[in-house]
Length: 158
Image 1: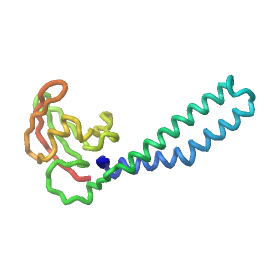
Image 2: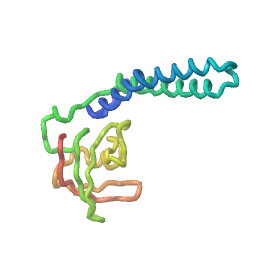
Image 3: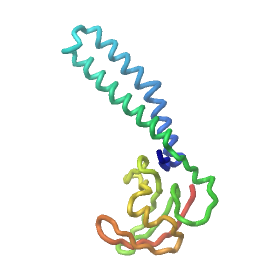
Image 4: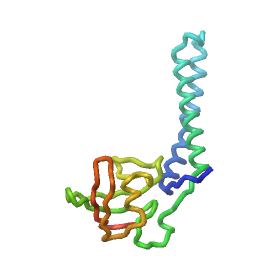
């Protein structure tokens, strides 16, 4: 199976979630199931059924995180020599030529992407258009809203 790129920050966040699920959430659900069993008939016991459903979600999430981490190619951008080019894991500041808005994006793996936090997937149109460019370059990117021209203002490996 191909390794999936992931930032060091993304891997750390997944490890923290995995630790929480295994050490806190899973024991709580097991306790809830045990307590619900004491209430009698399991077929009509809503607490038991809800706890079992939560157990299924929790175990599914644990398995997904373990799979993601085992298939991750974790990239520490701070250990890569700075070339000034836009690469996976970097933070890039751009200016939209149409609106003159300035925006800063971090280019991350698919599972780490979060538009509200300006973390965009390496596979997004904007990231693909910016990859391998450098400060001062002007790129035109086909986005879902049409073509947009950006000037790269700054590239950081942080």
